[in-house]
Length: 375
Image (cartoon, rainbow, N blue to C red; front, top):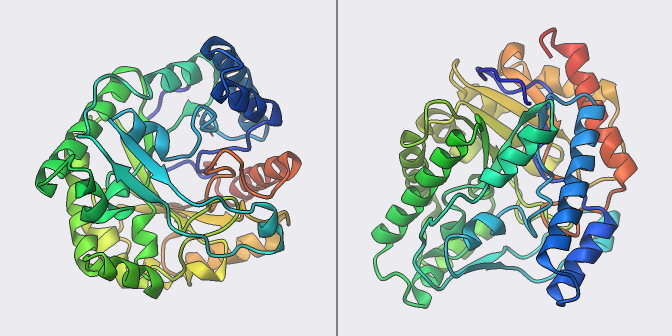
């Protein structure tokens, strides 16, 4: 069983959620899609792979574990596809090309062909499996409540006449999240991470232009997305601790946007009812630490300093120096460390070896243990 405890701060050593899928799991998933393997065999393969993923996380010393998102194709599709006829599409990316350096990839597009309805628990099985097999605390990752809208806007949400009124769309989103969060709590989960990439992309002029072209003002969307997320959080069980992860894209080692946190940090940190944030900080694309000056005293930040896009292992001294730089704006007691994103936001994963994945996770734990007495 997992250790039960209240989370006033995130764990000092964290990881964002997804892990590299074993080639054998990718193979059996392809065979299942082709009708060569039945659902039972696929589930057995997933179960065995997740048990190995749990062992990896606990072996490196993490006190929090996920299932690696091994039952999903992408971090954000599993939840939404259980709500209705929803697909999130994106052109394929060349993972091997990312070995020479991350490049900008096209934004995924969400297509909504039916109203969104929560009919049954979606991630309860994930919770129960982790509780059964892990000693560390389970963390469940969910796409952010505004992800579908950001990836298509009114045009895609209304295109197939599933919705004519966006207020109804937002009401359905909020209801679905409220039901799922209650289900998670009822099944013994007390730690949830929202993966909401929209906020971190608002700084990028190319993203701003694309939003304007479809009829959205990015500055107005910040306010709207904060309001919607707060309405979701207001209905979440009090037993759930919820953090939010922000990044600029992590598809096959590539990215979707660039730009610092300055233009939205004050609103994000003060108006959003989130206790802690997982912030991408592994490359110059994320800007500097100065926007952290807007963080109120009751909130904390997990610094995503270790890259899941690069095969190079970061140096301890460099990471410690960067944490000290961040501490110029946020008290050290309110900081933690993690990779900037998952290792496999989509099933194919980033251009990194399993050995380097393990080395980077172990490095995160070692840094945390050396800096924070309560790690």
